[in-house]
Image (cartoon, rainbow, N blue to C red; front, side, top):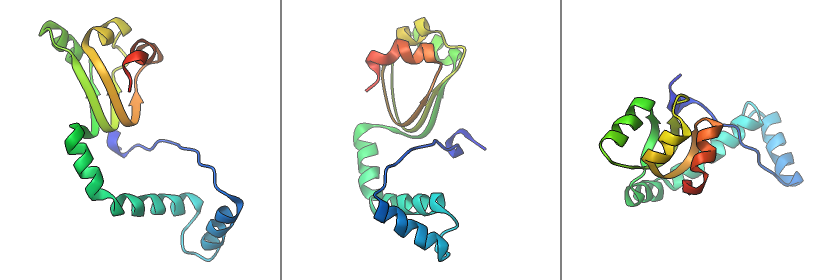
Length: 131
């Protein structure tokens, strides 16, 4: 399974009537279970708004999918005297061997619509730069 295929757990609150209706549809065989129903509903909404997502990704210059930054990548950025703006719709990951100091020296801003995977120390160091 590739990085982009991994899932992230979310929690939602539903009213009792909505939850009962979902349960009814599951019992009647429209979906295998509540999770399947919710995934299907989310995908339908994403399909409905796909054009808006595409335009926003282009306007905000977001990377669509997964983007990984290794220690070697960030060391090369530092040696070039540059700084990164990480903007991702999907998954952004920073390797576990990246130190907080290296992250601070090379990453100017982090904007992730999805999930950011990095060590707790790197996330703490970048906290003021995550939008």
